[in-house]
Length: 85
Image (tube, rainbow, N blue to C red; front, side):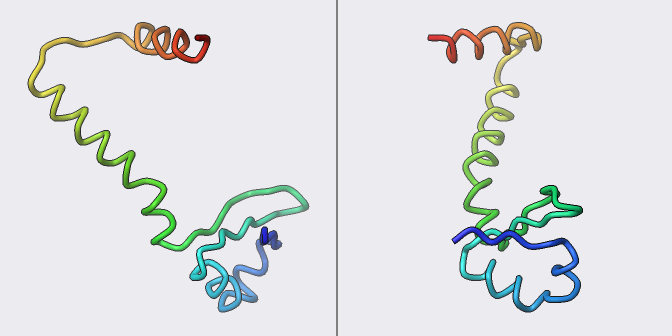
């Protein structure tokens, strides 16, 4: 179930929020009725970002082995062509 809490709960009810995120559920925090941030457990965050870190490391290694470079326009136009297809 989605957990939406006011940001003040982070200070006033930290143990509750900590318990929720330890169970793998993100907590969405609001301020003045608008979403401001999401609190995740370290494990959940790592699950979400590990693949990205691996791909960035691969890209760094490939860049070290090649002198080929692309401008940002080339990169974004190629991405746009992939999403339009």
